Length: 385
Image (cartoon, rainbow, N blue to C red; front, side, top):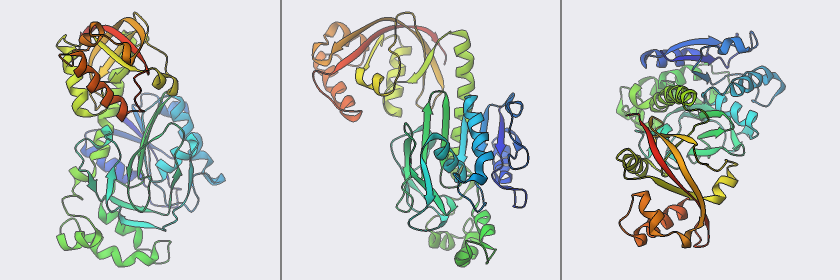
């Protein structure tokens, strides 16, 4: 059974932000526990047996880089040090940006409240598997991430807050986060607006529509969304995908115990290509792969070497195979012959291999006929389907 720890972002005098997450994860069949660093500092003991950690939104008056937020920052640093997959909503995402070296501040466009209109994907991250190209999720925030940490990847944006979601996967840290609130119903947003003397007092005119938007199409349209978009299954897509990611991460950790020193990766740069290439590996057709040498340097990743193990995952992170490196050669693109290209199993001719790989490299950092490639041959060790 997957065990999650929810880190409460509110001080005890405020309504608990963890409650909405507990409800969502209960419906997703996941067990949860809660901790509040504002009450008692988080310790390593809290993290024993924990598969994933959630940092909630917050209604406190200070930003994530303020002195008052030190306990929350300490808690996140501890979680990251234990390499536990982590989720953050709103303040939770801002907290991650602060801890990882980005910047947070008040949105230049003011408060974004109700729904995050016209939110759209950037790239094709597994966070959004099953998600439409654009959507309008519940949101309520004053601050936003203004500069991403180095190494972070932007995954969603809109016209109000350019950084609506980002991920970070580096040096053992696995973070996914959104500026909006997939855990909240529209009625929860309305509850935050009922205090006419609070910072959201000028938005009280949205209360009636938020209270009825899940059932009334006209109310949802006035907010910029639809009842279907606010349904549980649609609203919580990112959280359901993150739970799958947490479960996959646990399986990968187990495999790395069995296959000492194994790395893990997904082929390609999108779900369709990833599926096609992993299918070729499992069929025994693909026994080689290549990547740009400069990408290894940029990402500070070690080159593969003979006898290394690697866990191949689907685009959404499910382990599908284990491979073992047989040989590694550095070749210029223009020097690759059919002797190697044919082993990749993707094309019938060298010309086809060149066209397909040129297009891939143009999409991922640039192409030059003289560029150096890490050309690796491997064998299939385990079919994990």
